[in-house]
Image (cartoon, rainbow over all chains, first blue to last red; front, side, top):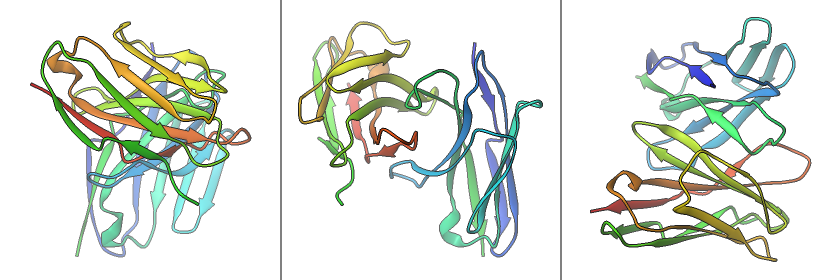
Length: 111
Length: 112
């Protein structure tokens, strides 16, 4: 079956850098996505990696190593508004809309 | 442009009843997928529709069904509600060229 592992909680201070890891075990693999969800809100797309390497989008970067079945989301210059849940999600079959999500990492940013 | 709209936002039902949830995708998006979010199971894929056809279905019982209309709006239905169906039901739309999902804020269902 498919499984994704990510830490349940991470705490950091404003201005710091935090890395949220995600390891996966899936029968197929097309790519790894990251989504952010604030309490009571809709998940919002952050990044997608289909190939090995680092993708950078502003303060957020995402990395993928297909050989290690591992990826991470890097958040730099943390702001209070970054306090949210972060989900990694694997596209493990042909449809890009059928994702298997990790259980989420609750990030708390302290002043 | 307007985002994904889901109605109703909140609803309370009792066991045995049925419920219908509605989703209007972003204009121009023909793909709609549904996810169930619970504290215990996280986000789980329910089904995906494209041009009124169900493309994929997740591992949920037949009580969970859906459909998509010619204007890409989608509905999902849960019959014979159980307590365990209490969840946030999220709809997401996406364009044809990208896998990025645009989620609505969800319909929070409570089954008593």
